[in-house]
Image (cartoon, rainbow, N blue to C red; front, side, top):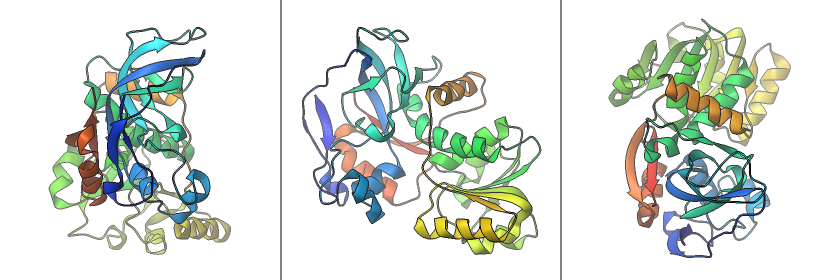
Length: 318
């Protein structure tokens, strides 16, 4: 099968398409024919080992996992003899978690992984881009226990995680303010935001407003500066936090009634099913900026690294 492989950490050019062995499912696994995947910020960070600490998990000098990609939409081609919940021919979408491997024509996953039947009303390209931003946003929104009528500010509201966070927070009944650039204001409004702040013209830390939850999806704000915009018992979510922000979060939790949430996300099939139900209810729509082929994977990574994409970048494979 074809796959985009990388054998060393580095720039987008380390990715190259080659023929590799097609996987065979174990008794409890399904073999997926991947029709579409996506390039996300996590893929880019792992490709270049940023931060350096990822090397202690994924390989100090060379990457242990040769095929990146963590999301997919496709069709079940084969099932192991113990598989009960999926059958050959099912169209599915989901997240491969830390096993990665979706920059390829085929991928084996346990049937209890983060997989669900694809919503019939959307394309494979649309389904493939949902899980990364969707499960990240959902993880933190559930953890923060967002309630109806709470005021939620989402920074980076037009990106993969931010666009998902706007829609999921609205589904939870929150009053949502999105922060983005001028060109993305119409998009964020269309996603359901009650108010949109153009960061090129207004600094939300200076407008006198306070919020129950501030969700920074792109590591764009100074934590210390933003604290004054957080209510007394408010929660700051830093889904793209580095080590510095994590340490600041610990200090804030010790010295005040405010909380800072960071860390690695977790998700299950139930989370993918929840996103599927939101889509089918018309409460969640995927946002796609650009589409590339697998052979254009390096160009797709280069584009994502510029940091200006709207929503997601999809890769069509089969």
